[in-house]
Amino acid sequence: MSWNTILGQERQKEVLRRAIRLGRLPNAYLFLGPEGVGKEATALEVAKVLNCDSPDALPNAEACGVCESCQKFAELMHPNLELVFPVEGILLENISESSSKREKQEEAFEKLKQLYEEKRRNPYFTMQMDKAMGVLTKQVELLIDKSVFKPSGGKKRVFIISQAERMNQESANKLLKLLEEPPPYVLFILISSRPEQLLPTIVSRCQPIRFSSLSAEQIAEGLKQYSPQSEANIAFAARFARGNFFYAQKLLHDSTLKERRDKALNLLRFALSPHKQLELMREIESLAKQSRDEQSQTLTSMLLFFQDVVRTRETHSHAPILNEDVSDAVKRFAQNFPMADLEQASREIEQARYALSRNANPTLTLMALVIRLKSLILNEVSTHH
Ligand SMILES: [Zn+2]
Image (cartoon, rainbow, N blue to C red; front, side, top):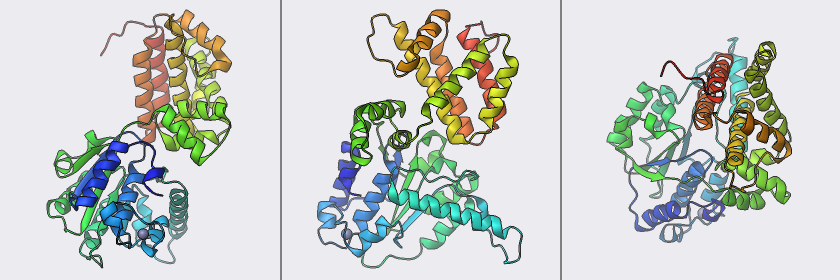
């Protein structure tokens, strides 16, 4: 990792490097902006520079990449680095040797280890445990305990709190206390793609840095660097990922994308057909059993299908459509449902995607979504708001 492995975000990088060069860092930053655009990767780079052993590191705001400190950062094992993100509560429990929970805890630790391995390989990876309930009070308490230890050699300890909006009320209040009297040798970097869900009192104690969505071109450029493949595959993944570089990388290695898209189209087809209720329920049940990631991809492909329909509707538009292999289906949909409110439909899909990512009941969420979509596509007059 170095600054130039972080895609785009030139202005954001310059603001940070300037603060490092001038020694004018705030006590806390809030990195906000969409997911997968490099907020954590940038936070890690800042932490690495601040701890690099090279005498040129601070004046140039550039880590050497080879000293002992930089190597520990590459391993994400530096003593001055604290990475906080939503984990399963069982990790923090004191469980006796003989307890039946022991095995579950070991499983959770194994998962955590895998997350770290993935993050070391790919700084754009978002560490997240499926059963995590949020950033737990205990995690913030541990941070408070650790904040009393001064780092050696005039370095900075860097506490990175990812998905900071997932702190519960109690942990947020504890963190607030820490932010109110921050130790001078600690730099807090809060990261959030949903900053509106953070306590305003926390936000007001942080200097915000707003990260930009990446363009399809920037993502394609990054994909060529990180995981070279055919131009066509790269172009497809770059557009499908909608500004999220980590997701684009994943998509590039995912051969089941078209299957997901077809599943999404089936869902729509059954929802809009009066005699396919049974098939619709089966499709929902089968999707509900899949992983959250697969559910999210299915919903994303539905969004992209709608985008193609909108492009097709604009008669003067010659913009290429994404789902070229099913262009007939796109055209048919545009003709059959000229009144469909696809803008609102897209918002509903986004909301369902968000709810699912926050552990909402998949069957209920998908069912409610399908009912809303049906009414928006057929453009039935809504009786309630
Ligand atoms: Zn170094």
